Amino acid sequence: MPVISVPYDFNEDELYVDLQSIFGHSLFLKCEGFNFAGSIKLKAAIEMVETAERDGVLTPDSILVESSSGNLGVALSMIAASKGYQFLCVTDSRCNLSTRLMMEALGSQVHVIAGQEANGGFLGARIDYVRALCASDDRYVWLSQYTNPNNWKAHYRRTAPEIARDFPGLDVLFVGAGTTGTLMGCARYFQEWHRPVRIVALDSVGSVIFGGAAGRRMIPGLGMSMRPPLLDEACVDEVILVEEADTIRACHRLARHGFLFGGSTGTVVSGAMDWLDQHGRRGLTAVAIAPDLGERYLDTVYHTNWLHALYGEDVLDDVLDDVLDYEDEPSTDAPAPDPAPPTPYPGSRQQ
Image (cartoon, helix red, strand yellow):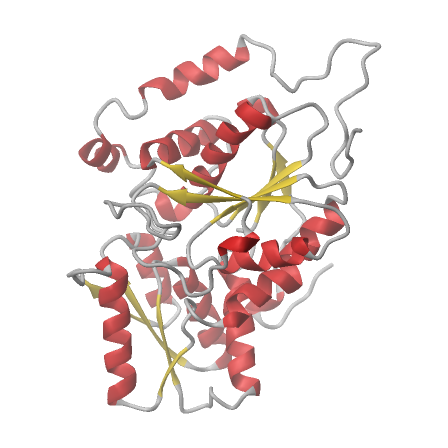
């Protein structure tokens, strides 16, 4: 029976959902939303905070400040409340209302940037604001998730080893790209592993992380309006860009089967299924990372008026049809009738 005294001591890291029954391909979705911060960002947040404490950068008089589209802000709010720090999150209008309210409930201040910097978009404007704060008062401590190596080290030390332990026969790993902390931590770990693992990065159309053209992005979590300083493209085997409309369809298809995940997960799943349509084979062991759950997206990704206003009234028209069509057809990965061998169990690799 787990008993904890601080909220960041709990994180369920061994829960996976096999999506074969929903999408027709076996893909093990690592669910990172089962902790008190509600997302994978808890790992990076605690790594950055505790390193800053050990280095003497963060003291009892410090005021934590960070730029975040939401999930890291919640994680830092929870940690700050537990440790007794003040925290100011600088976000923008794309941050979900429920996320802002959660940070405020935890005692944090939230500053919402209204305008965009000419070249850096909302992110550039947020960073400019944080830098001005730090220049005005030396009590402000900016952990800078965009440049802090402890962001990726958290996943090198925790997330990737968790996957390796649970899936020793891993063939391909799908990871969403934002700050690229999760992506780089996992990619660097599996570069050193005893067998090759293909690392596929998922990004949103309109993001410039991998050099694409900048465009409108309304779903927070993945993508950036500038190249992430943490990114080393040599660690990534393949990049897939996903339209936000496809992200939304993947989220709603999962929801139709009882799984409510966040927008980042929809992007990862949509891109992973496209990849598996082309490269999937019997016995392939594939894992994807789901950064959070869907409750914080009820007023955006799962809100009909929001969807129709931004993506058109027909954005979900084919979701129910896809579900019904799949129920009438055998999956491409389904085991053949006896005497064919059964689909491998999680963690195995069929030769």
